[in-house]
Image (cartoon, rainbow, N blue to C red):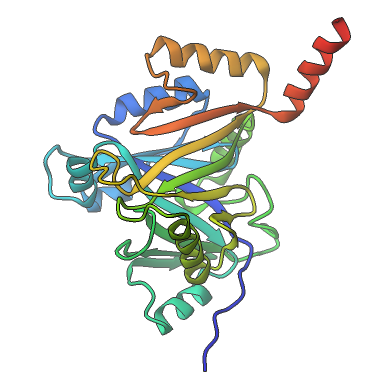
Length: 298
């Protein structure tokens, strides 16, 4: 009798979004976040799409768009159905192949793409039946003398960023003022109870081996939260609802908020960008220091 393997350390390494206007998306992310493009992957053209990747410290936000408007691609169909928004949750573990064996032996999810090279395993799963409305991908880099701690090292090699590690790791370090804190996925309109959010997290725990706390998935670097669906909410279908990013540097933080205002992207406490809510929070150490400085002047 097979048993479910215990959860193992897993990193939320990359979140992929989709956008109708990829140049506008690039402008907003680089200008508002103060990040930079670390890679544009020519290989994705085989699926009829184009992309770019930006650094959030050592983690990644990717944006994809059809090569030609109206083409029959997964990204194009999602854009037509839901507009700009979330696409993929891309996770990093120590042995993606072992988890694939578990998933396939129990018939939990269908592999739709996989490839292996050197120390890398990349495995994408069909999102059908998986809570949260995002395509899951579970990858791994095998630990090696040159990469002994791929999960713990903030700027460790990441296959999606291309072959030039020296170049993209330098860019990651230049963007170390940004840190991915969390993301939130909204469930389908019919899943409106708190028990549904816990069931969603439990499913991801069982399938992908991520530690769970109630309705949260606890990654080594961030959290993925599930929230109830909106009853009858056609305009708020299942999918990515928000991303929260920590910012170091009061001046940077103030500049970000100023740019958000100038671009007309202000929501009610969030930034409305690329079809999702973005929450920016000042690094806690700086916030405490700022409040301490204010108190000392009173």
